[in-house]
Amino acid sequence: MILLSAVLQQFMPIIGGVYDARILLLPLCFLCISVTLNPAGMLFIAYICGFIWDAQHVLLPEPENAAYTQPVESLPFGYSIILYAMMGMLMLSIQPLFRQGKWHYSALVTGLAIFLYLTIEYLLIFFVRGRWSFTEPTLLKIIFTSLFTMAASPLVYWFLFKLADSCHYIISYEGLKRKRRYSID
Image (cartoon, rainbow, N blue to C red):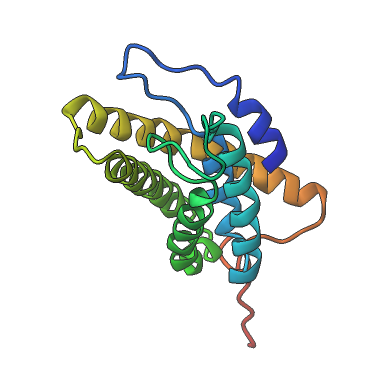
């Protein structure tokens, strides 16, 4: 699912009329998967997703006349792994609600996690560049990207449940099962 979302992310269009917002499919799949895992599994998936995300987005040009210099305009390779781990910890904090079958809370926290991820990423970029340029269109782009990604999360959760059913894997433990009451008369 992660590899499929990484490939599909390359074909996801920018929604031009709404501050160039988009659906972030790879982070969305990571967040939906991370709420179903234990902390060790989530950190492993965070490492894989962060590595893939950076491999797709951090392209460093060849430095001129220097062996170890890095351009100031980009973030170093590997920063996304830490941000993905932070998003995953946020999702793990609501795992008890998810296991009760209240996946809609996970969908809301997905939007919050994407908002925090993008805000921290923009702040890191501004810090590395050495100039502050956090404008209203940037904030609106972050907000609409978070909202569009959050709106797509029920579809990813549905796909995740169908995939788990086909593999005979149980995601949630107590909320989706009906409790039977037996009375002894």
